[in-house]
Image (cartoon, rainbow, N blue to C red; front, side):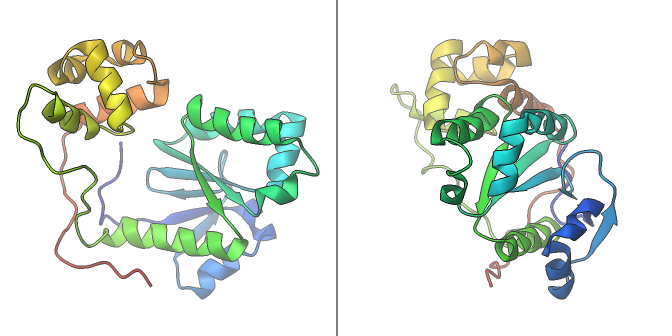
Amino acid sequence: MDEPIGASQMLFVDSRETRSLIPAMLKQAGVPFDMVEMPAGDYRLGPYLIERKTVNDLAASIFDGRLFEQAEAVCNSADRPMLLIEGDLASGQSQIQDESLYGAISSLTVFWGLQIIFMPSAAASARFLGRLHKHMTEGLGYEVATRVAKPKVAPDGAAAQYLVCGLPGVGPELARKLLTHFGSANGVFQASELDLRSCKGVGPSTARKIVEALEHRPTSFRSTKTAPDWR
């Protein structure tokens, strides 16, 4: 389960990352972290486990078949698995064909449920990790409207779609598919993980997160009092 926003969070960095400049950049920026030997991933912060790959690393791991093994290990080790791709994808096109490169990235998203983050450089990756740590420890600072204005109950199903869109990993299109498949928002909310996976467009990761969200008993809520510092 996700750890509450605002709880004490420590960033853990895999000891092999000393070969990159990121740990030094994090230290310079005042981001607290511990160097540890991690069985999977390169950075862990609360529920997030991040596998970092430069474009060259990505191409090499596609060639030798390690990519999907690493993806499976990361997905099995965290609630919020992420892949951070660092550098310009165009620079890797001399090593691997576009079809293989973009096909691998698409597969990781669709079939493994990995969240893909693109960063142009090690410095940008360090800034992203620092910001992630800040948001996890301090919260966003204000409430972001993630859905359209709350509709009135109407025959067109807008209210039901609004409710279902509040589930993790569910956008307007997938909400329509879920409502068509189960008949109502109540049907979606009462569906088991196996039932959810029977709906086209719902993968194992999304089904699991929906059930976890519906069954989770929150003990804290995000603060909405102050504006965020985006600097």
